[in-house]
Amino acid sequence: MTGTWPRTALALPFIGTALIVVLDYLSGTEVTVEPALTAVPALAAVVSRRTWYPLAIGLCTEAVAFLMAFRGDALGQSVHTASVVAIVLVAAIGWVSATLRLRQERALADAQLVASIARRVLLRPVPERVGTVRAAVHYEAAAAHARIGGDLYEVVNTRHGVRAVVGDVRGKGLGAVETAAAVLGAFREAAHQEPALDRVAGWLAVSLDRALHENDHPGVEEEFVTLVLIGVGPDGAAEIVNCGHPAPLLLRGADVRPLELAETVPPLGVLDPADVRPPVHRTVLQSGDRVLLFTDGMIEARDRSGAFYPLAERFPRCADGRPADVLRRLHEDVVRHVGRQLGDDAAMLLLQYDPPLTAGAHLPHQNGALAPVVR
Image (cartoon, rainbow, N blue to C red; front, side):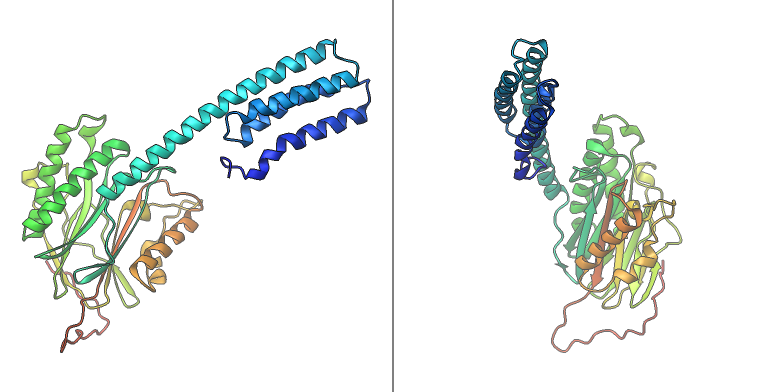
């Protein structure tokens, strides 16, 4: 490929030149189409990333212009002189344009490489199995060339069980990335140290408050983070803490329901950290249960008529196969619903409770009923 053009596109300037020569021949000597040759080096600058290509084509075009003028006995005419000068100018402008475009492409490639590395450091790949759960994540940044945004996720295996977080930073850009990094760094430490999930949320609130006071990017005083924490013990006992975030979805068999909690707290960054005391809600997962955590970029995706994406309705339809396959199908489905790229960052984390079998162990009886959420 040459830029966004196939290599065969390099022949377009020669084809254009040939067409102009044929047109000039057919028009006779009374009418000259020599000025049309000025478009040829401009076309060369468009189809090639080689900075020398517009200059080389311009040189060839000048030779053709002189041959056409000689044939039409127009070497001394002003139209020939103007055509020669115009070809030189267009070739020079094409060279400058190709040079600047190449520099921009290199800068963009470098920025994307740095963003990809930053994403792998900040948003680390999630293993297929983490303790007693199978896990998968799908993340899509809203910016077309971005690799990272304000959404965050993490899954860790601790002595307290598997713990996961999905969150959304208000805002976009580097400021949101800084805030997400602060929350994730705190979670990775607190998830291992704090036995109680509500204490983990308190730890995150303190770390976020400190980070917001240390950062000085525009709009930092208005930033906050919505997030949901979940912990899954070896026996399937699950704990959930929600800080102003969309409720996770629990899928058991063909039945899906949101884990809407009776009481939540505002997003982190709204209250003083000392006042962040979220209730812990508890439920019991059965083998094969799937819990989908997501950001509002999924449920706020609209089609052309303004209808929101019905995630709870589509989740069971896409739930066959491995967790990674489920998230891939959900992403493809929401893109079809919207009909274009999503307008907001969108992250999904799927946890499937799947404890490994041991000798003499038996799977818990599944009757298909959803266990109630108990505080």
